[in-house]
Each structure stands twice: as C-alpha cells, then as structure tokens.
Image 1: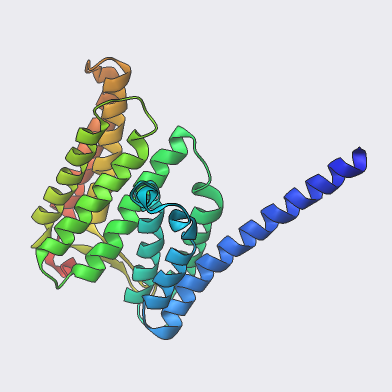
Image 2: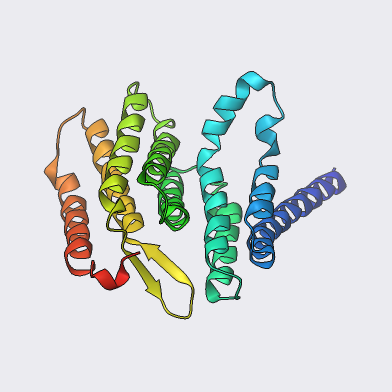
Length: 260
C-alpha cells in the first residue's frame, strides 16, 4: 500500500513539474518567437493552441467556453502584441514579459480565490489596454473603443459569474460601456509613459481604467454585501484614494511630451 501511495505521489509530482515546464515554455516561446520573427502571428497561434480544450467539445459549448476563457486569451494575446510592438532589438521588456506571462500561467491563473480572481481581472485590464493602445494608436478610434468594451466586459464577467447576483449581465454591460467611454475620451490625447532603454511603455489609459476597475469592484462588493446600502466607512478610503490618484495622473502627468 505504501509503495502504491509513493508511486502515485511521484506521478503527481512529475505531472505537476511537466505542467509548469510546459507553461514556462509557452510563455518564453510566444514572446521570443514574436521577437525573432518580427511578427505576432506565430505567438498568437501558440496562445490559441494552448487553449485547444475550448474547442474539444460540441460546437454549442464553444461560445460559453470562449467567454469563460476570454480573460486568459486577453492576457496571452496582450503579451504577444506588446512584444511585437517592442521592436526587433532585445530589451529588458522582453525578459519582463516572459517572466510576467510565466507568473500568470503558473501562479496566478490556476488560483480561484476571490483575491486571485480580482487580480486576474485587473491583470487583463492593465495589459490588455496596453497592447490595445499600442496596436491601435494610429488607427480609427472605433478599434480602441470596441477593444476596451470587450476587455471591460470580459474582466467584469470574470469576477461576477462567481457571485450570486442575478443582474450580473447588466453590470457586465455597464462595465464594458464605461471602459469604452473612457477609451473614447482618451483617444484624442493618448498619453504614454516610457522608460528609456527598457522598452517599457505604459499608456495613461491603462492606469486610469485599472484604478477605475479596482474602485468599481470594491464598491460593487460593498453594496452587494450591505443589500444596496452605501457604507461610507467601507468605501470611503478606496474612493478617495482612486479619485486623487486619477486626478494626479491627469492633471500633473499629462504633458504633451508623452503624447502618442
């Protein structure tokens, strides 16, 4: 009996180690193949191939599986697009992207706690809007607006489907519309913060939407917990902090030198 338990544990450990190794290989491979080829096609193909289970079911389940995996797809595609926009010269950003994607696949994505789910949602918003801004900076505003709607909708759904609120479909649409409105307002004045020599570029839009998403989620959970009543002692500090942070960014860190 003890030999059987030992063999079973050994197989589980080997399986876990192999799973981690494959995820790290996916993260590093998708980033460095994008850099080496100067194209995002193969990197995106690797990301979608890693999600083959979505389509290994009857077609009527594809839509549900796509919605359930949308946050993971947004994060994976975002890292590939950011790597593509970082150019053909090896920069620190490429190593940072590979490390962050590995962290996402190995550490953050498998967790299902409330905190982890919230972090996954914020991860998708932050990196999704970075990639979207870089890819659509010179395109028509409709691309940025539509993309932000999808990111806002998917991120809200990722958190809300785990609750018991019957109106979560309406709230998801509201989250998507708010994200799209903010993107539309920011499109004509796309501010980015760059760090020389690293390749790191962070759009102001990404910071603002991430802060708003954090505040939105905090206030929603407080209202849900207190049967729709506003308890200022619970939401006061996060609200003041978020509003002041956004005001600071918009007023003091929006010089034209950073404008796309």
